[in-house]
Length: 77
Image 1 (cartoon, rainbow, N blue to C red):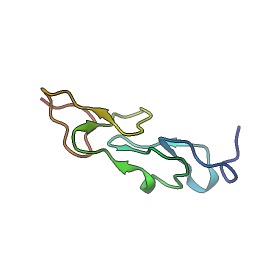
Image 2 (image 1 turned 180 degrees about the vertical axis):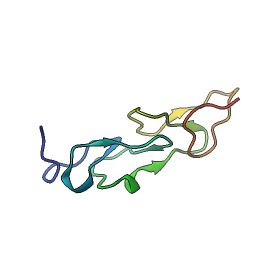
Image 3 (image 1 turned 60 degrees about the vertical axis):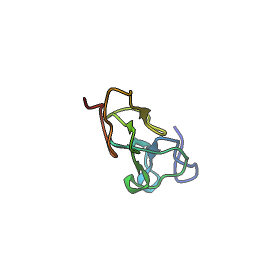
């Protein structure tokens, strides 16, 4: 187990005060290492969706027949 006080938190996660990595919440993504709090996770972009419990680095592209506004957690018809 790594001590995240000394190592950067991995992509798609944040590490509060050196804690174990926590996956960024639904509707957000993170494409670089080093997030120190949930606030360092980015809102999922328009045209993408970021489901819960998924390592979202940029989101999943929305299919042409669906709508995915900013901060989407799923595809909408």
